[in-house]
Image 1: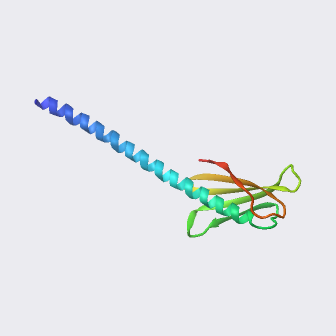
Image 2: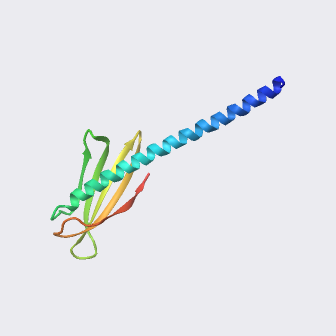
Image 3: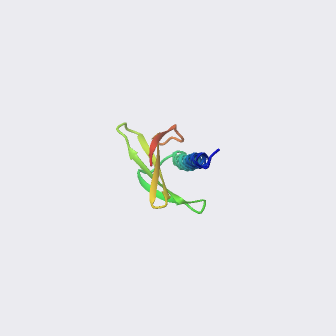
Length: 127
């Protein structure tokens, strides 16, 4: 082999290594984001279940945080009327501060007045 062939081979190997490292970094970021989304959905589901288990709930808004367990997360709950008499819409929004960005995850459920737990469905999330 000549020196030129060796240099070309080293450049190609270097380019390949850089591409592999970038792909690994992207995979790690995607995994971290998936874990964050899972935590947000779990916190929203727990808060929603806590609200729905109450026999009667007051209309309006309430908010709070998750204390030292999840210091960058907070929640907001809104209970509002629907067009159907005796049926309330309960929406829980979990906010997660990541650096200077804030991500949200929203979960909603319908609840009849004076009843315990009902079925909840995801309201979607916003990055």
